[in-house]
Amino acid sequence: MSAELTQLLTALPGIIVLVDEHGSVTYLSAQAVPLGLLRGDRLRSSRLRGFIEDVRVARAASSREWDCKRGEERDEFIVHASPFADGSILLTFDDVSEAKRLDAVRRDFVANVSHELKTPVSALSLLAEAVAEAADDSDAVKHFTKRMKTEAQRLAVLVGDLLDLSLFAHEGLRDIGELEVDVVVALATDAVAQVAQAKNIRLCVTGEHGLTIIGDREQLVMALRNLLTNAVGYSPAGGTVTVHVQRADEKIEISVTDEGDGIPEEAQSRLFERFFRVDAARSRETGGTGLGLAIVKHVCVNHGGDCIVSSVVGEGATFTLRLPARLDTSRLIDEPEDDDMPVVSPRADGETRS
Image (cartoon, rainbow, N blue to C red; front, side, top):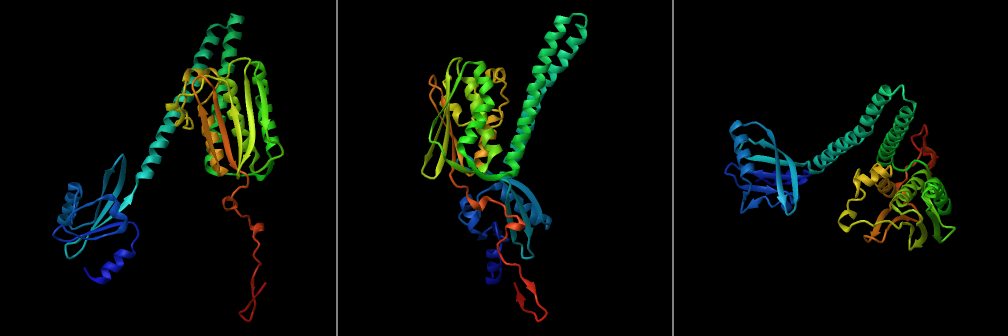
């Protein structure tokens, strides 16, 4: 292989393999090494060898899907093969693993949304029929219309959570400013106070006061409200839900602790998945959509933080928002008026002036 061809192949990005007319690999890019493609100077994969032979016989470029397994991971590629006049075949590999994973996530999400929407919609349809059949029975009509209102509210909450999740996941932070953590906590606790009072649950706020944080108030209040809503929903009547605020190094930590049944260890890693429920039946009883913790996750990611959970079965659970005390300014988007560089305009003599 000529030095010019080697230089050209080295300059190309991605995974590249060149196979000569005898099937020997004469060039392998550095990115291809981790795939373990070779046995000696030959390609290990019989599928790739067969693909190369097909291209050589057809004397025309072609593409084919190919995957390989490395340990527990499976990588998926689109392999493009181009024949050269001397009988060599150039292979380029496009990694589509992440694209396929995202596509699978989207399919699962659409299926889950369809399932979740189907339940209240079907219930409303059946209740509407029941109301029509019981038109002469005022007590029955009141009973069915009350249930219709409940299902309609559930549907509205689900649609609202879907919109919030879509917004927070794709638009990031919209309204950024310096916030008093005390205010964020107060707004979130006020939002769940009525529900907590109905269950005779005491909301207790402890820890440091006077802390500030840079972020989006609407998102942070919603994240904390979602944690409080879950804590109240899963705590026994007459219990206590505690919000604790503290500064830990460069992080502001806001913890929500309940006195519920706790969360099994095997379920804790999946808590922030969309529509995942530890107890689906109980979640629906409490009005949960299965999206609250997914929203919390996206709010934390948007702020450069995270949310951790600590729980022992029978001893309740603690969810902690861990947010940077000062938001990384590299995450912010400059507006034209924020540009601090001087405006430079051309002069007739070809020089510039500011």
